[in-house]
Image (spheres, rainbow, N blue to C red):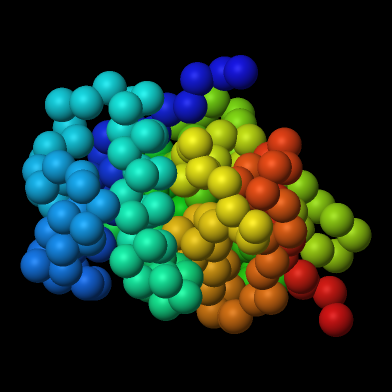
Length: 201
């Protein structure tokens, strides 16, 4: 199996967004309950780690949030993903920002797939393991890396942050809410995580 890595700058933005949304004190409580290092509440801590250890931290931290909040974790992590999109786009390299500007110049109905491909590029660091496909009128984002699921097992899909990123990316693209479903997830035993975006009626 290919190694699963996660970029340090995205992890840093994730922790910063988490701190903004739930508060530093709550993060420390989440870490304490899970028996995780308190340094994880500080985003700079992850800049010194290699990307494989960061992927494990990303997965473990989300698991701790799911335990701490129970059923409420889905909404919180989706909100984190929603807020994370803007942070990642604002801090993207100039080439990515130029691509974003080109997408915004397209007719609205033509922006969705390029926007998702932009998201894949931002998350993916060009390793080709997040892809976007057309399904008749609908779209499918496939994540073969799925760092949020690393060493995780669940009865239902758990990629709530990615879900939030997709939702906000599409809203940024065309100003519309879309029906999104994570129809397969590594955590449930699937080969990859798949998000279906319904475009057709």
